[in-house]
Length: 333
Image (cartoon, rainbow, N blue to C red; front, side):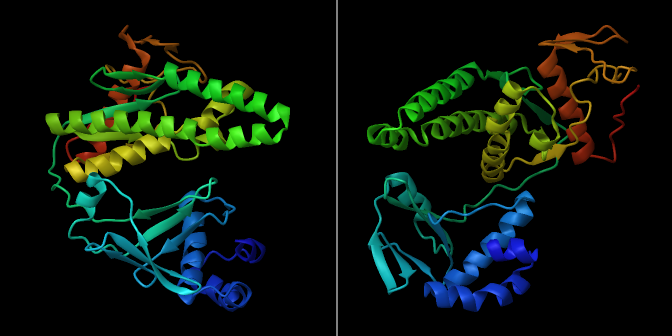
């Protein structure tokens, strides 16, 4: 990463020529591990458009450095000393997913507690996706984690309270600066993120289930770059940075892919300000028909829950994406 940053090189081949030999000589790593590390740096930059500092806690494995042995429930991993087989300690669900598979990639991770986990990539058969005029719009927010165009909503109060609790606990423990406090911080590490993941897994599962039952496409707003573009007071800005909106979309996408449900993203501009009935937008710049949880159109008088109104707009924009040949959606200033 340091070499790529210094030379501003984000091409895999060019970065390979710059770093391959020096890294191998300095670390004695196997050739494929060095190549994987180079690809990982370049792919991360392309995916996030940011320079990320990697910690020495994980390593990417490919078909040359990893092998799954189903008969023995082991994995073979190439280390600096050579190929070593490790016993897997996994449950029936994971065994069923791996049955008959010949995975060719995985990630070996080390936790702060010194435990090792391996994330194995498997191919799961997906259902064919058919064309449908129905769209389930999903509006994501801080107050309500998600709201659908059918009126279903998931309140974020418990999640917000959990985040604030961990912030207070961490601040209190860090102030003590003792060895026991540091051990406690390590034990608490990851609990907040695991709770956030559990919440998003549950919501995404329900979204896909509803879309599958109604033969609908799921539409999200494209919130790429929102953390950099919003200008808010410090408390709200902190909430934005802890907001796992992309994780919810990611969980929904892979579940939808398995279920044969299509997921699309739409332009987020004016979705919360536009009336979902008459498509009218406030004529004055900076003005909005939305007030807290309520939306009242100043043009046609339509009143609704603000988040549901936004989700309806997202659904209509989703229909434009999925069936542009029959869509006539337009905003009226």
